[in-house]
View 1 (cartoon, rainbow, N blue to C red):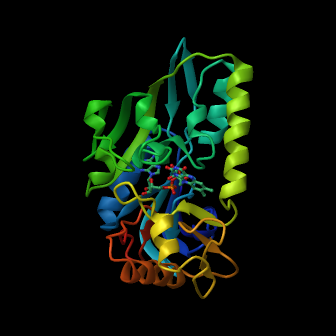
View 2: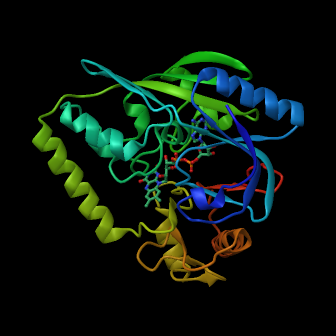
Length: 288
Ligand SMILES: Cc1cc2nc3c(=O)[nH]c(=O)nc-3n(C[C@H](O)[C@H](O)[C@H](O)COP(=O)(O)OP(=O)(O)OC[C@H]3O[C@@H](n4cnc5c(N)ncnc54)[C@H](O)[C@@H]3O)c2cc1C
């Protein structure tokens, strides 16, 4: 594994916000993951695992952090059990599984990697289907040790997991999913339907998806809309007209712009709006 210095990471996120990581490495093996952890500990730096960057914004300038990207993306299928490594692109996985008559279509439209989806228990809204619905186990490096977690041990909740709860760095390595069988044409039809609905209702360019979590039964976009903040803008970060829970980079947005929009929303709305996106500060720690 090569650890590179001063590598642009903002450009690796879907929102294209942020500067360069002091150190950056791509991880192909479990030994690479262990080495990265050791390196970060020796340098006394936080380690941040970047998946597809579809839920992340980085600080501008140099970020004092080791960013690692899991490049391992093997998929092994045995009947209805699918073991998939964390670096696998989720939309590609959904399409490939459809050809095997295995149905993961409810997660259609969620960008990024399988690792990112496990970390944040990605899925439909609070009452919909999340990835935890399919998880049998997850293997991860936690507190310096490899462990395979059962579904229950993963502590999945709406957009939360045991892995997200940890203070120390966690590297999710692979997961085993149990998937229902369904005819390929039906799954493909479902994927098309869900993608069409997304395109009609959500922006998909230079955004990181929903910024805030749903509060109780009320979607965050409703509260943002009711507060008159649809279209609100600071610098080049704007709350999308098309969907009031999506932030857009409409030009040369900065990290400060994104934080200022979040601050403005949180100040104006009395309900506590929790942030779903990951904001990585220049000291390498996550902000919210
Ligand atoms: C257009 C659009 C639509 C979206 N719609 C949805 C939706 O409907 N539902 C939904 O849940 N999300 C949605 N999202 C948000 C995003 O796609 C998901 O949160 C996704 O699961 C993030 O995956 P990622 O690999 O891009 O994660 P990243 O943004 O790279 O990382 C997110 C977090 O996961 C951690 N992480 C990533 N990989 C690992 C790993 N291997 N080990 C440990 N930690 C890891 C990172 O450290 C970070 O804290 C949407 C985003 C976009 C842009």
